[in-house]
Length: 244
Length: 204
Ligand SMILES: [Zn+2]
Image (cartoon, rainbow over all chains, first blue to last red; front, side, top):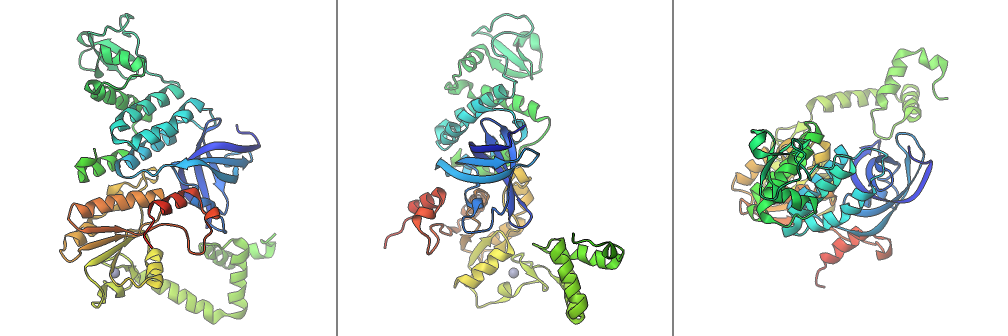
């Protein structure tokens, strides 16, 4: 549980929703408390409207008081730059926020993932780094919530991954040699598994395999929940094929 | 304590107070004040209000063209043939349309979205239901779109999406400008607004 008073905790707004006439319930992502909700009383009124800066994709610092389910936001300040995401980049930004919203637990420290959040947003704003940024974020998220993908050995035989062999990744357990795995799981090359272990996402030839693997793992942990940012993403790419 | 024992035993009065609380900004105390005011001093006004509420709730629907509130099939703005039929301004809500009508000399047409794209609220392109808007785009009358959604992340996403829908139909697309409020001092403007205003600077 959170302390009674917290000052200037770095935070990103994940979502806000209106509460009563002028207040907001703000879902924030923080390094020390993971995901949590704050009540921003009167955020939509007064001279210095807090709602103006309580927006996603801005580096903020928040202070709050109270312990229970819904501590009271006492102050919010801008803590640096903000990123203007548009089009496809914005759909990706929403995807990242949806992942945090549904998968990052409340009140559990998440400093490792938090540190990745801003660089990933900056990368998704650059078209040729977008896919790598998303994979990196998905991977870090799985690590942070305690489900780091198992990449270094065949889960049937226990043998180390062979770069020349093809595997099928059994979701969520791990890779099995393709010839012994049947049709189940996601196909992935031995070299790709080694690259992933090393945090190397640069090989475009294996980008698709990595994407399919991450998507299946994320899907498993979402437990059947569909992400709307995906449909936003596909609508954007249908409308503007060049944006991909 | 607002709720007296005697009051609690009057079910109709209690129900009236409770019903008044559906109004924005009205808590138990102000609801009680309103109920007493009407009963003690203005029963006529209270009856007029109840008639008007019933009429309005039953009869006001959405304009078939712009989806703004109206008791007719087509609202007065849409029915006004002296307005520029080729321009279409897209807003999130009826109050936004009213604000633009009041503050600007815009004399084109409108379309009210009654929402915005917001994945975490479960609203994607499908849920926003833009078939009626696409029909207007395809009617051949509209040539220019003005995107007047809010300057929030969701408003921007919505503007982008509708802008692309319009662009694929070769319509001209404009976005309203966002910047430093008139009379605003730069020192007190938040960084996001300031950087947006700076990026959108215009020659003088
Ligand atoms: Zn109308």
